[in-house]
Structure formats: C-alpha cells, structure tokens
Length: 234
View 1 (cartoon, rainbow, N blue to C red):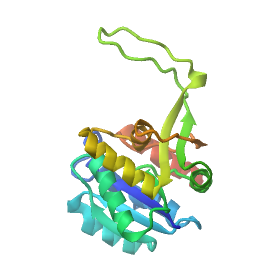
View 2 (cartoon, helix red, strand yellow):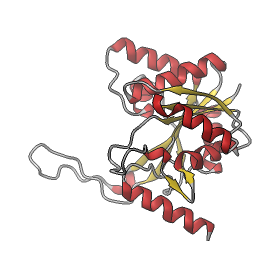
View 3 (tube, rainbow, N blue to C red):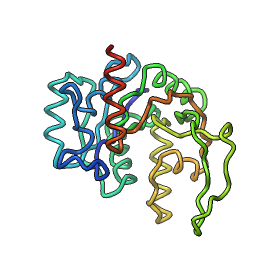
C-alpha cells in the first residue's frame, strides 16, 4: 500500500488578472506557488509518490520545475480534462496504472501551499482508520444562505460551520468506483471530491487543519500568500 498525493494544477487563473501566467506558476522569492505546494509532499516521510495533473501547454515547464527543485517523488505529470471532475478522474486513472487499489490518495490543490506535515499525517491516519479524511477549518465569519430576491436567507450558527479544504483523502479503489458511478449517472458537473464521495454514500470523516491552508484564487490570496511566507521566514 502506498500513500500518493494527486495534485491538481490545471487551472489558468482567470480570476487573477495577472496576464498569461497561470496562478500556480506565479512566483514569490523566485519560487512558483506550485513548488511551495509540492515540496510539502516531497518532504513528508509517509508520501511515496506524487501525480501532477496539469494543463497540457504547461506540462513541459512543470517537468523542468520538478527537476530543478528535485521533486523526486513525482511519478507522473499528466494532462487534465475539460472540467475539474474530468481532471480528477484522469489523475485517479493514472494512479490506478501505477499503484494498487488499497493505496491512499490525498487529493490536493496545487495552489494550496500552506498544507503542513501534521495535516498530511492526520489525513493518512484517518483513511487507515475510517476510509476517508476531509481537511476542515473553522468558519471565521458568519455564513448566510442566498435567496433569489437579494434578501438574506438563513443565517447559520457559525459554531456549527466549518470550511472544507484539502487534502481530501480516500482509498484509490473507492475513488475510482465513485467516479465511475458518477459517470454512469450522466452528471459530471461535480467540483469537489468530498461532495462526490458523500453523494455516492461514503461517510466523510473530519481532519482538523489550519486556517492558513488557503487556496490561492484571487490576487488578494496571492498577497496573503506572500505575506505569510515572509512572516514565517522572519
């Protein structure tokens, strides 16, 4: 049994307004965001392999980065699909080619660089004990449901709310079965692994993560990322 990180880095960062460079390749201190993320898995003693799902036009550059920064656990760099669901499925199919179905898969975003060692360890342990691990962090602001008439809907009790983050981890065999079942249903408009697995009847067990484990989606997120890197180095 192996522990494999499947890293999704196929987005083009349309919300970043930063020109032609996808957000995962934006740099701070001359290092791309993607490398900050990959190094966390490279340096974790329990991670055996890394599969990177990448937009096709940036695969060769990703190979250069992996070699330059000695991400030696990289098992494959493959092309993503037309949607997030299809990209995740491509990554899982490649994992199934390389590893057995009892392997633990940690599904993670390439632009979520503040994943830490403890959270990775807890994800692996939770899958071994429960079959799943969904990394969460407490909601720090009030959550209100939307309505169609621009009125505030139900205001949730913040103490009962949490934010689903990543990794989201399961056994490879379960992930493949769930994705194939979703294909059979005809609905592949699924943007989140946790949602998919829950809809297919799998119980989701929580792993407490840190609030700083942000996904870099906007320029505000990027500036936060830079500030956190600088603070940690200081």
